[in-house]
Structure formats: C-alpha cells, structure tokens
Length: 482
Ligand code: NBP
Image (cartoon, rainbow, N blue to C red; front, top):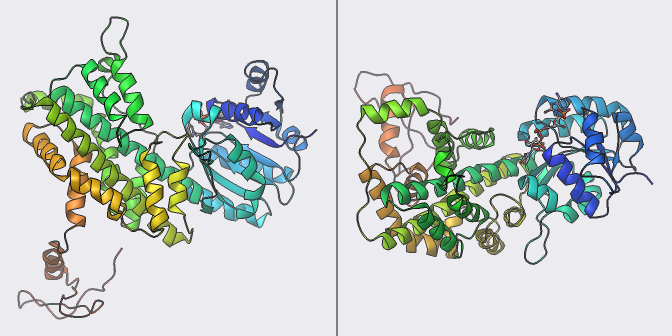
C-alpha cells in the first residue's frame, strides 16, 4: 500500500507531525537530507508504527499515492526552494507540495505562481503550537492553490487541534501566501501578548515589590478571568519554578530576548500597508532594546536610576493591572485584524476573520478563551473594521479605561517601561479622536515643500497650495501618498 503523504524534514516539527498523522491512520513516508536521521527516527519514536522511510527524493516520490502530497518541514528560505527544484522533475501534474515552515509570505506568493505554470499545486501553511502542538494538535493555517485543498483537508483537519465544540483549528485561509500571512500575524500577536505579560510582571515585581509566589498566584487567578490563555497559564508555571537552590529560575535568566523575524515582518508589512500596528511593533522594539544589555547597564548607572516603587493598595493595583492588560490585548488583536483586513483587500484574499479566530482558538501559542469572543464579533459583522467597536469589546475597553490610564500614568511617573500597554492606550486615544493635529502637519508640509492640503470646507480630493511666506511660487508638488 502506498503512502498517503510524504514529509521532508525530521527535526522537532516534522517528526511530531508525522507521529500525529500516523495516530490518525495516515500512512506517512519520511525523508530527511541527512539520511541517518531517517533511521534514527524509524528505530526511535516511529518504531512499531506504520511510518516508512525514504532515503532519496525519488524513493519518496515512488512510495506515494497520486496525487502525491509532500510536506516540507525544513528551515524556511533557500532550503525550501532547493527541495522544490529537486522535487519538480520527479513529480506529475496535479501533485501537491506543501511548505509547513515559517516562510515569509511573498516567497509563498512566488512559489504558488511558479509551480502553477508547471502544473504542480503549492500550499504554504502556517503551523503553530511548537513541539506539543505538532504532536497532539497544532493550529494549521493553509493557503495557496485552492485546487489542492480538498486532497489535503482530511489529513490537516484530522491532525489539527479542536475547539471545545470539536471544530478543527484548521481551515482554508485563501489564495497565494494568505496562510503564511495569517501565520505571520499570529506570531506578531504572540510577540504582543508576551510583551504585555512581561510588562505586568515588571510592574508587580519592581513597582509593587511582590514575591514570585505572589505573582504566580495572581497569574493563576487571572487565568480564571477573560485573560484565560496558554501564555498566562505558562507564565504562572514559570514564576513558580525554582532553581536547584530554591530561588526562582526566571531571575537567573539573562534579560535579552531573542527573535527569529516573524514579529519584525509583521511590523514591516504594517508600515508598508500604512496600518498603525503600534503594539506589536513596540513589542519587537522592546526585544531590540533588551538586547542592548551592556549599554543598559551603563546607562542605568549614568542616569542613577532609582527604584520604581508604586505606593498604594496592592490589591487595587493588581486589579487595575489586569484590566490594563486585557484592554491592551484587545487593541493588539484589533490592530492585527486591521492588518489582515488591509492585506486581504490588497491581495483579493477574501479572508474570513471569524475563521482565523477559530483557527487560533486551540493548538497554537496564542490560544485563549478571548478568541471565541473575536469569532463571535466577526459572526455578527464579518467586515468589522475595528474589533474594539464590537459591543462586547467596547464594553471592556470602556470599563477598563480608568484603571488602564492609572497604570499607564503610574508607570510613566515611577519609570517602569511599559511600551506596549501605554502605546495601546495612545492608539485608542488617537483612534477615538475625530480631529487630530494632522491639519498642522499638512500646513507644515505645504509650507516647506508645497505638498498641498485638502480643506474641511471643500470636497475631499481637491488640493490647495498656499504661498505661506509670500516669497514662494505658486507651483505645487505632485500629490500622492506612499
Ligand atoms: P529546523 O527549522 O531546525 O529545520 C531542520 C530541518 O531542515 C532538518 O530536516 C534539516 O536537515 C533541514 N535543513 C537545514 Br536546517 N538546512 C538544510 C539544507 N541546507 N538542505 C536540506 N535540508 C536542510 O526544524 P524545525 O524546528 O522542526 O522547524 C521546521 C520548520 O517549521 C521551520 O520553518 C520552522 O521555522 C517552522 N516552525 C517551527 C516551530 C518550532 O517550534 N520549532 C514551530 C512552528 C513552525 P538535516 O537534518 O539534514 O540538517
């Protein structure tokens, strides 16, 4: 009997996805560049299963049922192109290549188009949930050639995570690189969620002087509220984890954050599309700032930074902090969905935002109860332009406002950096201000560069130039937005 699907790449993600597929009754053919890893896998975790090995790409192709489905779980970038180049001459028209790595979506756009000309279907799929997700149910976000989806759907939906209503956390996202785009935004949101939690931790630790056991209890309690999520849950575990000497391990970890690029790509895309994705971008910058460790140590001494004590009733502050975190999180998701909306419009992807929320509901790192409310919001209005306008989220934002302002103001007063919580509040203040000072900005642009402006008392699209000094000419610059 031939294999149902081939997987190339036997590192942590590939191995666990294969075992997951095997659990669901699919016969998987496994291949890896370094052939010894095929043997190690077959004699190790895959022993006693239906999984078979292939030591060359030709052998892999020969062992698969038509149309062949071959999933790449390898390092993103050139490695994917190199496997595609080697596979194409061995495949037949109608066969399917799937890239399940963390690929930058323009690469997927390019591959879908190039392979279409050769009659090969290509799917670029986000896979989230790390090792455990891959093994027992990841969130899977596939996009690319729609003709390929019916062949891949049963396998992907079987192995994916399920919601409490048994809905698969996997559905077709859209054409081209839509799946990888949505995965990229997922990762950007993950950066934001993590940063928000770390800001709350620093406020509690440095501002309120709380012990790790106290902070652990707070996160356990928060996990019973609207903040219920995987990241809040693991944070409580981390805060309670003691090193061999009985001290909290977290304080022994160097405070420089790593990053692999997906948060940065999200920020770059937001800048390219003109979407104010402030919270996620601040989270990326917070990681950049953290990596300037030596400079920070010197600067703390140079500026003689004092301790940042927050006075007042601790319990009141903790509740204010919870509300500030929740409200900021709403802004982060609202901005992320704004970005997806713009990308969907620009690329004609016709994204279903409720489905995206459903795909993130289980299996992935940002899984949370909150995503069900997001899905409900898009069920009510599939074209909602700002998540915070939905009545459920608007209610939370309004109820949290005073606590959120208190926390933001206090952090500024005592010098605790909270870039994401404060920028979220600033965004909402801007978004809910009908008249911003951009009129003055337009005047400045026209003054020095004859860039022209529109007037509130004239129809939009009519542009004016003023000779502000009496010395300039009447010639204006061309009006366009980049
Ligand atoms: P890695 O990203 O570490 O990739 C390892 C695989 O890539 C191995 O099969 C390795 O073969 C192959 N490879 C490399 Br590296 N360079 C190669 C080359 N020049 N030619 C051929 N093969 C090459 O594995 P992973 O962590 O399992 O991740 C797989 C994909 O899934 C990545 O795109 C990753 O970003 C994404 N992802 C990872 C996670 C996670 O939690 N780790 C989560 C979600 C998505 P070899 O054995 O011969 O070196």
